[in-house]
Length: 199
Image (cartoon, rainbow, N blue to C red; front, side, top):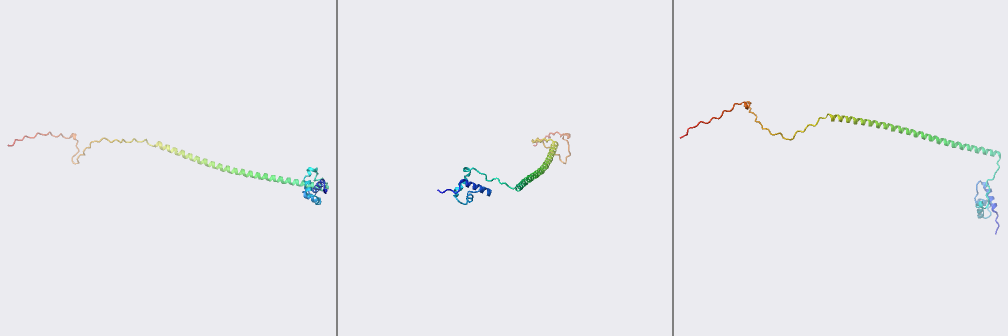
């Protein structure tokens, strides 16, 4: 059986070293390539992916001492970036608050306009209602006056026919009007004279 070219410790160390160089965790094929593309790629893959269980985890970002000037500049840049971000956030919050305030002012103005419109409409409807009530009162008063001035109902004439009266004969045009009671009584009739018997 051939001896492995690299031990698990060497593979993990190479992978950690590569991670420091590229600034991220390398893949198994990148570790195999860093080892000179020698050895079994499958074995490198298994060792690298299972390193946390087989090999204690080592720091992938060892402390690197930077010159004082670089550290100062880095600190200044970070502080400036922090202040810039704080300013951006503050401006965003201020703009949002201003926009909210504008929306509230517009909403309040719209509410005031709508309220004024409704108030005018209510006043108009109340005026119309008062006019209608006045017309009803005047109509009721006029109707009461007409009913009080109306005469009592006349008695219906009787439908029975009057008794027939004896018609009097009109007097003659030639004879003067005389009262029958004042007229002289007629003479009593005289008996006729006896006549002698004929032979």
